[in-house]
Length: 224
Image (tube, rainbow, N blue to C red; front, top):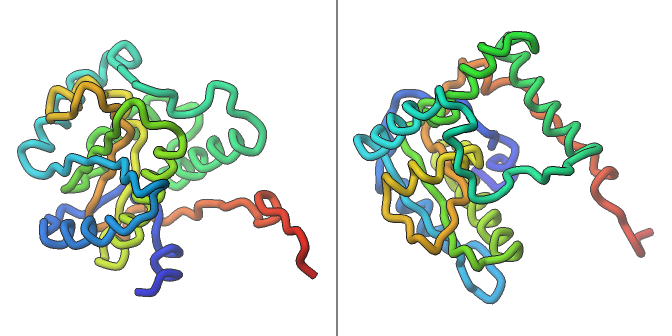
């Protein structure tokens, strides 16, 4: 698989097959991803990789908290800006509506949507979960570096025939994450990533995810 194929076939997969992932594959991917760029070569990423009983223990702990709704959330940062608006907010809402349409869950089916949202905290059935964290003093440039590292991982996973879903939603349950694994107190829980083999027949893995036209984001200067 070349880079273009990896980019075009990558998507946030939200339904995985019940198939294990070999640690050897993950180590190969993560070793290659260490070549990701970072300002001043700081390499600010840190991760915990879970499968089996440790992963299930975390999923079970969060499942107990889900019925409490927002009362059980403990986010360490704003996942979206409070004043997100315009095209950015339209895109965020648009992909959600497209996803629910693919799942045949109507806008007024609040319970159906809540039940689907809970799948986030089962990692959509993926057999592997990676939790990403970084020192709290790191700033936006270092968070950008972590994003480049995560994208590198996602493309390398595609090269191995694997899929992923980066999940900032897990930041809402930072307390349960900290109880389940040794994340330093002076680190912030950034996100999780579900890793596994996609279910090719699941409708949620088939709907088209719209992208903005190039001229909405890019301006050219000095070109003929």
